[in-house]
Image (tube, rainbow, N blue to C red):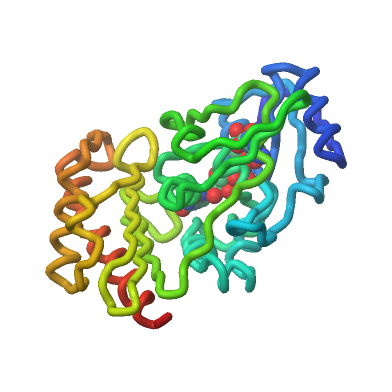
Length: 291
Ligand SMILES: Cc1cc2nc3c(=O)[nH]c(=O)nc-3n(C[C@H](O)[C@H](O)[C@H](O)COP(=O)(O)OP(=O)(O)OC[C@H]3O[C@@H](n4cnc5c(N)ncnc54)[C@H](O)[C@@H]3O)c2cc1C
């Protein structure tokens, strides 16, 4: 399998890449880690006439703290997120989840921006972006804008990106002092994309009751689903196994998953319940550790 012929461009600056994308039009595609785009080109599912390689643009590869949280450049590899001491301290769900993506070789090439550019509904970064209400920074040759994850993710492999626009970075909030996280996925084989995945954060108040809960599910529809359990079921409750089971049942009941060759809707709902339970149990254990 070989790709159809294409012209290759290797800009060194973001401005140069954006000008190329603007002038080359819809036949041009940005290339990041190539872990999804190159196989699609080899199978001729994608046939761009021009590839604009982002790999030489150092200004897109960064992890830094900003006033409200952490900001990660689009060209940052999954593996760099996995071993970032700053992220481990400020937003440990990010390195924790990065470790679960594919296999090591894929993580050394695949990027945050590429994963969000692809927008696979079962992938880790779209799910975590929904969970944490991340903001996606987007630029074209003529404008820059920042989108909430829920506005950026539009459907299966579909985003709000306009022709000529690139994801340049993503801002995530930091986790609080007594806030734990959990991520659980059901895959057919180790390293595969999830069939269903659940992510959670749970912050405890000083008296051990629930201060703040976030839940999201991947693989349950066109975009990862952020769930908000009823306020009286979460805030002020002392979390235990039974509470976790109840929240997981509420979460699963709030979904309307599709059926496909991988799983029936009913099986997905069962998976959602089990994975939310496990992700919440992990989040609770981690929240207690950080007290
Ligand atoms: C065997 C295998 C297993 C995998 N398992 C998983 C998994 O378990 N979980 C998971 O999440 N992923 C998985 N992946 C995918 C991997 O995470 C890739 O990193 C990801 O799909 C795309 O990132 P990339 O940097 O390689 O992007 P590329 O393949 O280079 O690009 C992907 C798409 O995004 C566009 N794009 C790239 N950069 C930008 C940008 N900055 N702005 C806008 N659009 C952009 C491209 O034009 C293309 O359309 C797997 C891949 C393989 C090959």
